[in-house]
Length: 314
Image (tube, rainbow, N blue to C red; front, side, top):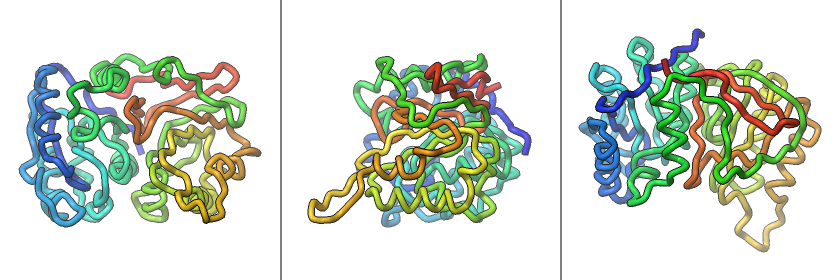
């Protein structure tokens, strides 16, 4: 599949807002997020079904799908931001008009549950997408995290090569396995990646750099998810692994026997034949590195860098 890069976002252009998964508990977060974008000089188009609820979903499947399709149809909308993750994106996959997405490539941003859409878009269309901040998670606060801001807007508004990705406050990456690797960076939320494995929406990871993160999975569940990827022989194909933040991934029951998260990771990667970086600041955290999926990435543990020697927008 040929990689398609969306056009960069220019000041004054229109950003579309959709809720393909869950709805925020507090809808004023959407209003505050919109005000933030408008204050930066962008115009905002909110999907007509944003704010609806159906249990843990942000409306019916048809309503959430309609908003997604509408944003890709709308010629004025240049970027599509998701309100939040949660659950529900995967329920839309079998009805998405991927030709519409392919013929109208746009900046598409989200993470967590949005992982399934990002991987499906790349698999079906080749579209580069962005694991980055969401409206009612990262952009609604009175003071938006400056590191997240600077990193994100630089990547989607400039067609210059991105260069080295650095943690906030120059915090170092941890080297789990040494080496060098180069390939397209792919991945996202570990549990969501596994949820589409074996389907037509799951991308090929041959010669890729895999980046994974997760939240709220106890060590045995992380173990099970990594074992699924290993059993699918994904680890035999990749050129490198970047471990993002695994937030609240510990056993809360003190009476329950458990391995630690680090022990699980060591079991899988202590003897890996590819380089492994740990402590990459991406995931369910405040200061968050934006990751463009589908573009070239280089990692070098000896020189301690992760680099995107390419642009992510045209």
